[in-house]
Length: 372
Ligand code: NAP
Image (tube, rainbow, N blue to C red; front, side, top):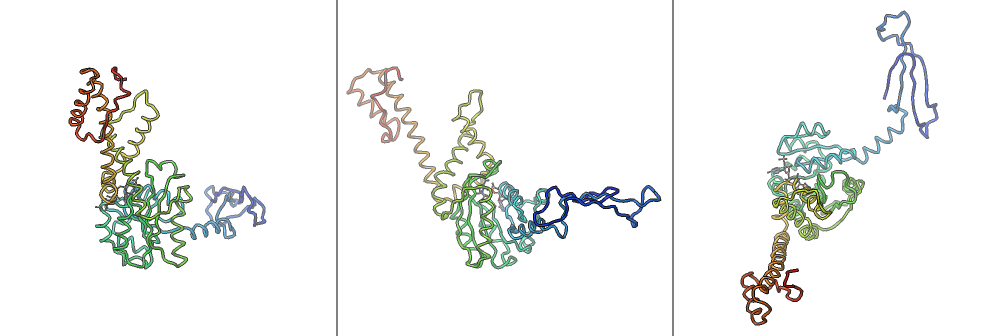
């Protein structure tokens, strides 16, 4: 940065560079004949220049820094600049990558404020020849969108990445629609704008290098992209898309389902919140920002999700039966006393009334007459 003021030019380098041997501070007085003198003074004015960390031709520090940034930075085109696309772009920019974006909605102003170049037309975006094209569209719209993208405008071995919350589905679409020369990296950052608001440290990042060419440049490009998440401290988990979907249905889909159920149920904070209740409130907070499209995509495009939904349903029914079975026992004892023959008859009646009696055998022994 250069600061001009009358009288002297001074270089203010607070820290001497280890490989340069000039003094920290130079002062000189310049007669600046070519500049007009606002004071009309008979004397030539002089300028005081404070020079702090300016990128001088001999400033190797800044040259090296620029060269390092150039060598590690990628030109990343984000397709789908909604909630998650914007969230990712902020971190990518912090890592000195060049960001371009395209979306169905015109986000030009917002993108401009963030420092992202927005292209309303995907042809224009692809003509910029990004190193990486990152798909962050809704799961439901992915296939329609992929069919329309002008791949012919891209460089022949562009890296395609997706961040969809299901993995086998985009993997199969990429293999079906992308030109065979393109590299494919399927990823799932397992956090979002809410859970990753303050930091990504320790949060899981799942990836599958579905198809990465052998050339060193292609391997490096993929590694540079993964580096963003690694440097942010994510827990990097390499696994196949199929494995991901199996685990995610049992964890992520169930989490979203419970969050939505509790949101519909209408949890409210109270002055006596327990830690457990706070956890439930946080769960609702974490999932309510996500679109229904996202949740529906988790259900529709993960073949394991339906089974998990049915298991949840059965578990809920089973819990209800445990409760009602015990209640029924207490009530029956109060009505009829402890007559064994009668108890058996009433037991089968109770099971009929409760529907599928096989799930519940009301525990008789530890139920006292007072219901405790
Ligand atoms: P989303 O509702 O799943 O997707 C919204 C994005 O999809 C927007 O960019 C939207 O574009 C685009 N889109 C929707 N319908 C479209 C259509 N018919 N044609 C073209 N584009 C369409 O919400 P999201 O949270 O932003 O998620 C984006 C992707 O990231 C999803 O695949 C999701 O699974 C994944 N993901 C999300 C999270 C998260 O926490 N949110 C975490 C990990 C992964 P416009 O905005 O231009 O309309």
